[in-house]
Picture (cartoon, rainbow, N blue to C red):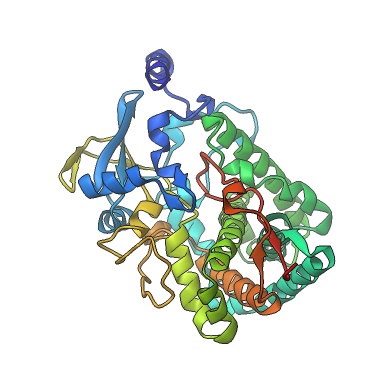
Length: 419
């Protein structure tokens, strides 16, 4: 299948260029950094990292895709401001008739546009401004725990806890009106699903941008109380609807599905490590360190945005040609034994603050502190409210997402109290 894919894509390039938004699936070799064995990255990723922290993942359509899987190597690539471009537009020619089909967002933008747009967004994510969200986060978490009690004794933590919390937080942060939230909610998981290749990813992105363009247009006329309204009031003349919708889309993308997966998989990990669950129940100060360890251990965002070499370069012994794609495995880097001893274990005393679960460098997730606030609040609250939380099915019955940039579990049936 990969050979067929390569031949077909090469024909497309010869005929007028590759359009990733028309690729119907991801080639098998490309999927290595997105595969898991339970909660762990597959063993082949570790073997490749040990053998070659920078290795060629595949070649197609006239250029190489390189995989960087070592911790030091990943941080070096992500910190490099001059050697790589994140602008993917040359591989996604404009094919739509509306602005929603344009490719954008912080993760796919280079300076100076990236610098300008991030400068508009960053002030909204300072610790001072985020502090005003803490009462709302606490309220949302408590309401969801109350809802669990009403539905119990067996509930699905994915549908009834992990997804509602970040979704409601993001809606309140952005200022999405209650009547728009159901349509907004349905735009999440498909944004990271690789099973339909570029077609699925870019179609989902266009749908999300169309929705947010409409929200921005309405709020430009009457700014709301959330982040969209705040940017319009303070910088309305400096940003057009498409750029602001792209910023809002990035906040949604980075703060909904990713945090939901961390909440579900993090709770599963805590159930499997009752000593850690007990620790955060007994010690308020322990939850911050536990969250950092869970972020490192789970690495739900499995890779960073692809980067494209601006010029020929040497990267830890490999020759990277101009135009080649470089893909950083965040899960591989965070499980690198050169970075964290016994990396497959969960150690709440580990001090691995330089993990790359949120990326690194100037493309690091702008909402990292908001995610930490939600995770600390939710894990501490569920551990306190339901001290005997347990899986309601055998672990082998759990179904995890395959071929997704954001790793997750489909459902998580748990029993709130002993039967």
